Amino acid sequence: MPERDQTEFPGLEIRDHAPDELDDVARMNKELLEDEQSRNPMSVAELRDRFVRFVRDDGWTVAVFTCDAEIVGFITYRYQPDDAAPGGRSVHLRQFYIARPHRRRGLGAAAIALFKRSRLNPGDRIILDVLDTNPGGRRFWQQVGFVPYATIMESTV
Image (cartoon, rainbow, N blue to C red):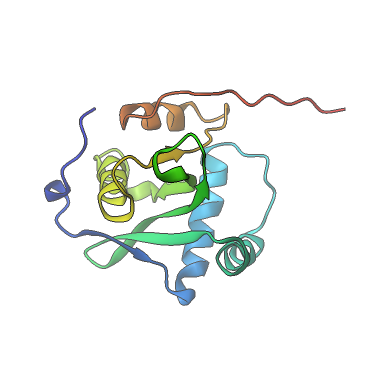
């Protein structure tokens, strides 16, 4: 899939979240957990508190995507040291979500393209995890140009 042109969504913008928007972001995060069939049991209130800690203590940026002033999604990311990356850093994309009513029209691809253009430097490498329980997420990331690099395996004792 070619990179989406933002002109397909002329009202699409990205900006850092406002503190009073964390409830909305936490609700979307809960939907993300459901959609990817995550085993994370956190409530919306716990997810909101976690976002506060992410930003305050852990160096994450939480940004929202808006279209015509309506929040349609969010992204959580941070820069991290990476000796194998140009400039010695990569970008860890922890969460990306487009609200359910806004899917299947190319908005997600356009939002990722906007994120890359507005928040990253040429040559930045983006790292993300996709749960095996989320084949739709895997397809999306491959459609917007991501390729598998490693597999994390686990065992429970």
